[in-house]
Length: 176
Image 1: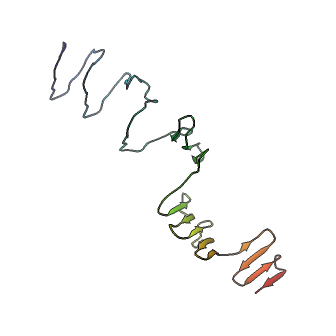
Image 2 (image 1 turned 180 degrees about the vertical axis):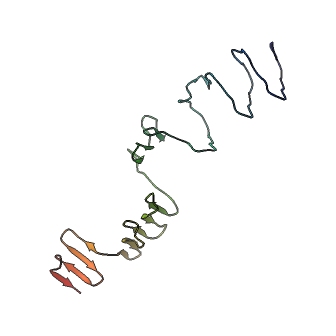
Image 3 (image 1 turned 90 degrees about the vertical axis):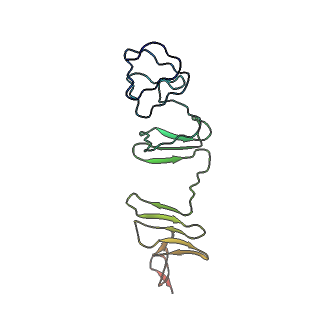
């Protein structure tokens, strides 16, 4: 057992147990190389509620970061008026940029459903491809000379362009 006041270093090779201690006061750094088990409050810069602690600098997480439904990760400007919010409302996953443009950047950008069906591919310096229901071939794609449609291109006035020709008026006139 250790008792009394100390000025200087205390080195312990085993377990140091504090019993019936109301406070530990250190002017220097306290380093714990294992876990800290605390049955009371932990005070970080005057905050005992660690739901709201401001950390200056970079934080590193070695595991996942969990944010509950209807709680938001906010970026830029202020917490009250962020440039970007990312959150789940319990049903939908939402990226929201209220007053700014939302850019999604990458060498190429692929948008897929959660069962890995292609929806849209945006290739760097190349085509944009749009897919329907996991189809193997894109239904619409841009090319260096225009666009290509696989299947029928239907318009509001019943215009269809197919490999056999142009169909106008739902089968009334066909141009080959």
